[in-house]
Length: 248
Image 1 (cartoon, rainbow, N blue to C red):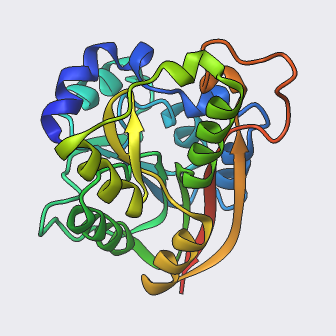
Image 2: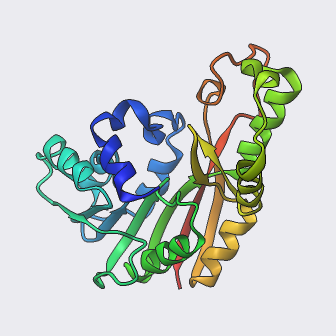
Image 3: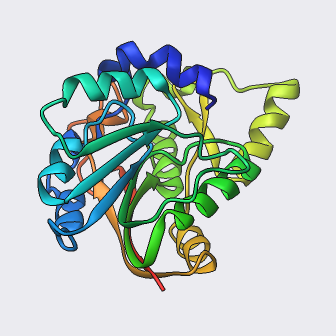
């Protein structure tokens, strides 16, 4: 997902992009953030998009930095949440080779590490770490590869949303998709999107110097996966992974 994609989708972000905050029915992410919140500390929202998490973090931290790759997203966020005077917005590309060295007490990154490019993801993780002070807190949410595969299995086994009528890819597209899935990349609305395994996340963060405190599911309704979810389809529900970690 390049800058051009996010700039194009910014005006319709509210309807086009999945709302994690709204669909986290149990408020697990907000509770994780609140567990280390302080009016004396600063926090950075990495990949803030149109600022959905600003009303959650601005009242409980002294200073908030909201960054995103899309200048249009930032303009929308700044206009919508202008009442929060402790928020500063800045366009930063987390896949750039170099970015300004800034340090914060805490960070959140909610479904922002999505690029199919491994080199760009490596830079994203590196820069995310560099934003935190020693013992800084992190709440990270990413798409779950286990959940995505689970949904595919259900769709195919019970022909949910007429899955049996899907035309399998051939030729170069088939080869490309096979290579993608080996790296945990699968489409969301025809856009190649990185999904993560639980153990993969734990390893990546440990290698960046984090102590992983908790990894848990953020569960959503099946209507977020299927247009016509069977009524009998209950638990387990589809999910993202949430990680709570602290820099050593």
